[in-house]
Amino acid sequence: MASAIPTAMERPHFIGIGGAGMSGIAKILAQRGAEVAGSDAKESATAEALRALGATVHIGHAAEHLADDATCVVVSSAIRADNPELARAAELSVPVVHRSDALASLMGGLRAIAVAGTHGKTTTTSMLAVALTELGLDPSYAIGGDLEGPGTNARHGAGDIFVAEADESDRSFQKYDPEVAIVLNVELDHHANYASMDEIYDSFETFVGKVRPGGTLVIAADQPGAVELTKRVRDLSSLKVVTYGESETADVRVHKVTPRGLTSEVTVLLNGKFLTFTVSVPGRHYAHNAVAALAAGVALGIPAHNLASALGKYTGVKRRLQLKGEAKGVQVIDSYAHHPTEMTADLEAMRGAASDSRLLVVFQPHLFSRTQELGKEMGEALALADLSVVLDIYPAREDPVPGVTSALIIDAAKAAGATVTAVHDKSTVPDVVAGMTAPGDLVLTMGAGDVTDLGPAILARLSN
Image: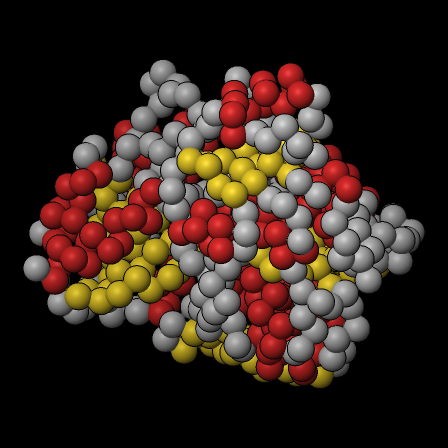
């Protein structure tokens, strides 16, 4: 079993160390004994967690933050070329390593499961991490979100399994060579990097082609993009393909998903036998994620009934339909959904979990490029809510695009029959929501940006 530190990673410096993907790799390296350092734009609980593991974390970006003896500089695709620490690395001739290459090096020699797809990666990876840990297999894992249970996004385990979220956004998932690959769905997203579905398919084909000889692809049988990808990779002779879903032709067939409030009961048909287990998050979308996790574990040789029981211990990931609290009879829930498919899945899940409640959504669009391409579909998704508040676009790494604003979403939502309020000053949202809600309502803060910060503020305002 491989758990040594690659030589190039003995004294790594991470630019943007507080990011979900970057911090996970940094944590694993620190737990393996590396001298980890890095910088981030602002203080955070993640920065404190890294310091607790012995890492040096600087706030702000400056050339002097990079130590002269650093063995490499780790970056993500979000780091701009004019970053002063990158310039300093060039002066010192310190190798620059992409985040995906760093993660690939940590997986070396281990039985890796790489979880890919346009949506659901974090949840499915988390389900596997929790279930394998519950079974005493002590896996290593790197996830794009914090688990509710262990409260972290990454861990170095003593076992021989490594579960990793595989990011397609910048093609970085093509660096991995897993024993088992999961593909949950294939859709067009990340429009700054992909111009067409053909480019998306080519990228996923490359990822699947890297599965180790004799390995397994676990892939959705119902989602059109996944079905097309399956046709394209069926001829890979060294690859075993296992499909899952509600299709009668699925190898692992979802027989029934029964809502149980904020949980679901799932029955699958596997190898001619029915198996029923509980998923502690609502909605068909999350039930399918759990079945994908089940199929991947079985592909590694883990008994299905043991896995099914362990999957029931999963209690969620932060920002994936996470209950933030209740005040004056109003529940506030947080969702990371930012693509129309994700938005629709989470809104339908909440409808199924609380059919007698009014649903109010506070939505913050994420990225100008995504809004430009999918704004109409985002607006149509919001029509599933009773009331919607739409904020300005969260730019993240992008510069503004002329003519691209939240109005694209608002106009589409109204055309679909939604009741929408535009709010440009985020600080006023708690007051706006308090004026719109009544006891028994559900409030869903939704988006990949800092809209998540509004949950506690809304609860505080409702309490007062």
